[in-house]
Each structure stands twice: as structure tokens, then as C-alpha cells.
Amino acid sequence: MIANRITVGDERTIIENMLDRNREALIETVRGLSDVDARRRLVTSLTTPISLIKHAAAAERIWFQRFWAGLDESECEGYSRRDEGTFVVADGESLSDVIAEFESASRRSREIASRFDLDDVKHNPREGTVSMRWTLLAMIEEFARHAGHGDILREQIVSVR
Image (cartoon, rainbow, N blue to C red):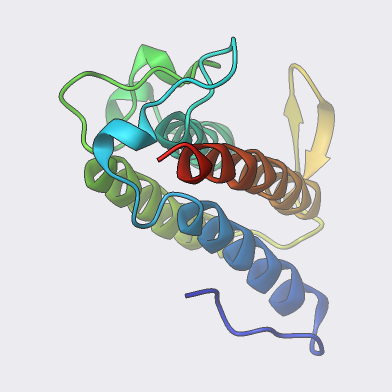
């Protein structure tokens, strides 16, 4: 179920609601898929429905836990070397495990983001100086794009059943 649609209010409320809506839209792309279907590779990359969720959890950890909170890898719940730009899902991980991981990482991101003002900035080696506003908007873009990927993959999976 997609979060309540908030179309008015202060900037932060609207941005955070849109991010939550895109998080939930990404999860909706895998709801009802079996673990087998969620792992089906329909494109040449490692992109599968389950790997999109795994990648999103990693993005949450990288941007909010590692970058904004400054946590060491060992302090990041669920962090692994696979977080660094991969879509790899371990054989023993179920779709429900990966969804739970993403939801947990998202909760932690919300808590970390709440400690910062939208105009607070930090230097990122790849992006330069970024604000919390930029980070939240970048996550909206990231999850919206991947929800679109997930919609297409789901459509392909369901049509060949």
C-alpha cells in the first residue's frame, strides 16, 4: 500500500513523503512474486526484481548510515562489501528477507535524516558538496527509476507465467 499522498505542507514533509512513496512503490513491484520469479534474469545485467530491492537497501546504508551518520561499516546493520555498487543477492536470502532489510534500512535512514536540516551539507568524494535536501531528492530519483525497472520486469515475469 502506497503512503498517503501529501501534496501540501512544508518542503521537508513533502520531500520525505515522496521518498516514502517511492520506497513503497519499489516494494510493490515485488509483492506477490515467488522467490524464483524475483530472481529471474530477464536482462543481461544483474538486475532482477529482488536485486533492485537489495540495491535500494545498500543505497540507504551508503547515503544515510555511512555518509551522513559517518558510521563505520561494522556499525551498519546489514552492510557488506556487496553494498558497493552491486546488485548481488546471496543464495540463502529470500525475497521477504530482502524486503525486510530494505524496510529496516529505510527506517534507519529516516531517523538519521531527521537529525539534519535540509540545508546541512557535507563533502562527498564523488558528488562534491551535497545537502541533505540533495540526498533526499537523489533517493527519490533513485527509487523512482528502480520502481520503473521493477514494473517492467514484473510485467515480463507475469506475462510468461
